[in-house]
Amino acid sequence: MPTAPADTPLLRELLAPHHVNEPAAASDASDASTRAHRARHARPHRRSMDPFGAESAAESAAESAAQNSWGEESTPRGRHRGRSEEDIPFTGGGLNWAALARCESGGNAHVTDASGRYGGLYQFDAHTWHSLGGHGLPQDASPSEQTTRARALYRERGISPWPTCGRRAER
Image (cartoon, rainbow, N blue to C red; front, top):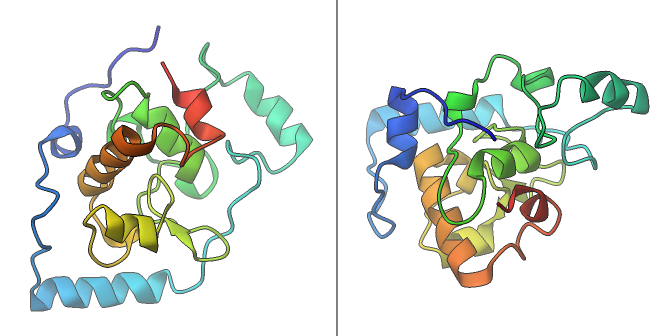
């Protein structure tokens, strides 16, 4: 049975109540930060067809030894190396949110798919994001805001927005 990660400041932020209808605060510093972020991430990231990101059969076989009993990776790899389990929300709403985030985005809150259409931890498209009250792009929002909106979407539509990863993340 998976255990909850240690209590960390980021984990507290992710699990803290988030006001969905609260507009994002804007400042010159955040605008500059947003521009810098977009400049760094202007080119969409490649997203593998395999939801767990295996690049080849050999890599997949080699990594199966590093998976826990839930079929989840025990250590991140690739462009997500260095991220820890504490960086991803893990409980609530009938889903293993950490597993869903790992499956959808490798646990990277700022990633986009190759087409640039889907972004963030739970790979929202802009239309769905805005229908849930989100502003801007999902990949530019905080992990806690993304999780709050993903939970709202789950309450509305169940796992249908995440047909593959949602089944794997159900408890």
